[in-house]
Every structure is written in C-alpha cells, then in structure tokens.
Length: 285
Length: 204
Image (cartoon, rainbow over all chains, first blue to last red; front, side, top):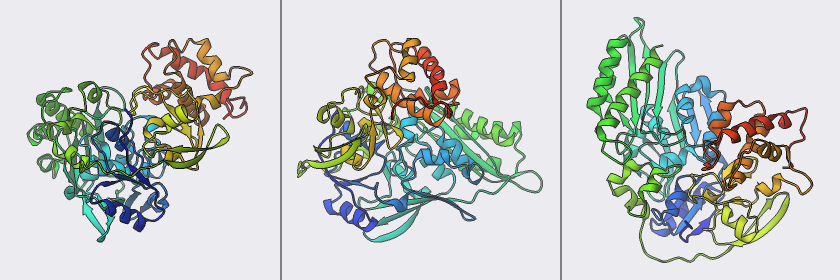
C-alpha cells in the first residue's frame, strides 16, 4: 500500500512543532518513530494533511533516573530502554514489559511517546503507564501540562491529547528496592500484540504482607486497565496460593473483553486471570 | 474499518491490535477530516546509500523502500507487505536494522543507509552469503535481503549470540519456504566471521 499524500515538516524546536501541529485545524499529526502511524497511513486509517516529524527534537530523547523516578523522553526508543542497564534496578517492570514490544527492527524505531499517543489497548507501554500511575507531560499551544495516565487513555486509539499537543516525557514514579513485581504476556507469536498481559507490583510491610498493590492488564478492554478489585484482594495479605487464586477470580470479574477473530471474550477473560496469576507467582517467588 | 481486512488484522506487526475494531471512535478520530485539500510537492532529500551521497526528489509520502527501489534502482531491497510485518524491506539506517517501508524517504535526510547491495561485492561472496549458500538458507530468495541485513547487524553487534537470540531477532522476518531452520543455522555458522579478532566481515 502506498501512503496517502501529505505535507511534511521537520521542526527543530518544540514551539515550532506545536505551531505546525496547530496550523491545520486538527489535520496535522506528529510522527515519532512512525511504527504505528505509517501502517495506519498505509491502510488509510489516518490521512493527515501534514506530518510533523519530531526527530530533530533532541531534548525528547533522554532517559533520566533520579530519586523521583524514571523519566522517559517521548522519543526514547524501545531499543534505548533495552540497552539501558540502569533500568534493571531503576524500573525492572518497565524493562520486562518492553522486551515484549514488537520485533527487532521495530524496536529500533518505535518510541515511548508514539506508543502512548497511539494508545493501542494491547500495547505494553500504555499498560505500564497505567499500572505505574505515570504522569504524561505534554506541550501544546496553551502551554505545558501534565496528564495522569488514568485520565489520558480514553478508549481504543483515543486519548486526552489534543491535536496541537505533543508528548514531551513520561514520568514513572520511583521504584523502591525490594518491591515485588511480575509481568506476563501471552501472544500467539513472539512480537505480536498481546492477547492478554498483566503487570503487577506490590510492596511488603514489616509483616510480609502486600501493600500498595498495583495490577494492570492489557488486551482485554478498549484501553489499558487498572484492576482495583484485584488490588483490594492483595492489599494486607500474604501473597500465597490462596490469595493468588482469589486474585485470579477477581480478575475474571474485573474485565469485560469482547469477542473478536482472535479469541472469544471468555478466552480473553480466562487468559487475563492466568496472566495475573502467573505474574503474581513471579512476584511472590 | 473495511479497509482493514481480516488477513491484515491477523498479520499484525506494527498494526493496531484488533481490539479497537469493535468501536469506531478511535479510527474516526485519527482519520481526521476528509477534505481533499493537499498542497504537497516534491522535496529534495540527501542521504548516503552504501557509502555514496545521493540526492533525490521525492513526495513526502514516498517510503524509503520505494525511494531505494524506484528512484535509486536498488531493487535488492524487497517489498512484501508494505506495512511493517514481513521484514523483507529491512535496511540498515545509521547502524540499526529498520523496516524501510515504515520510514519515509524524507526522514532519512542526513542518514547513512546500507542496503543488501552494500553488504556484497562483485569479487566474492561474503562470509554471511557463503553461509546462507552452504546451509541452503533460501529457496525463492524473496525474504533473503531482509534476512541478510538483519543478520548482519545482529552479528556485528552481538557476535556471540545464541540460537535463541537469532530466532528472536529473525522473528520479525517472514520466510515461507525454508521453515527457518537453515536460516538460523546459517546465521549461527557465520558468527565466526564477525569475531572481533577476525573482522573479515561484510563490507558495510
């Protein structure tokens, strides 16, 4: 498929990029790695009048790690996360999840900001952003502001981002030493989108009971989900087989997937439960 | 939504996952307005291909893959799916293996691009090519340029990679003939030529 026609601009500053995005009455689109947008163009699911390439905005490329947490610039590629050894301890859940993103060649181009803005309900990065209470920093013609992940994802491929806004960075809160976590994903082939995946973490109190449990799932709704019902099951409990079984049951109750050509709703519900169960086993191990 | 067929939804690589197809809002939103007002025109792009500076006039919508094939006549880069699933069009851009069907030619401005032509010479087969031949790692050959470019970068960066890693990396390249086993064997066997002490590797 050849791409539909569009104009192209490659600004060198963020204000210039925002101005360009605002210049076409909502008909301009930012392109980062292009690994989701270009296929969308090929299938005519998107045909913007103008593409604004963010590749010269070097400020959006860094991974910053401080006591406040991990800040991923919007143009950070999957490859950059894979290669950054600091993240092994600074955010092991992020690292584990990103290992499931697409294929080698796509990981060399695909970006954090692009994935968040695209908001595929089965994509890993939006799932991690939701699970970890990420803050998404954006800049638009009305200035800079921060959107909480829970408010950002509004539906399939639908976000709180307005047409003149660019994601600048994604901030993940600090990851304490000793935090328990697990990430499990099931896809038919390596690199495919998840049929379902679960990201879980919790901290341990002095009595070895879970606190601050966070449970997120992808692939089983129109957006990445946090499962408060499952978190309630975990908080205050020792994470043993009995608790894990209750968490699995709560996952079944907490998701409402749809039938599609890949899997029935019942299968996806069961799979989400199994992913949560296995992720919790990893966390507790 | 009808533009996205069952087959294409199934062959998801970089495509959206199928879940959102239940609800149309997302696609409607990204589709934007349908007014056919475009003012595009050709743009001049300079980049380096296989060590040579080139300057081409392209429409912004032209992918790097089409630019290489149609403008520069480098038809070694093959186009299979044209939406980032099959890996046949893999080229090396600034040292990284990327899908040239998912990169606009205008985005390659200033880049160093290496295609499969740049990994060969007229004098002799390279070690990687020899290994593909020895192991019978191709039949129809359509996927081979993408396999070679991908394997070259992998072996250059990770000359000690094991079979699992080779399989993982090549999972983004579809081959419908070989069943992959000879390809994996060929890549593993070529590792010797990429060891730091013996860099008689492909010209790149």
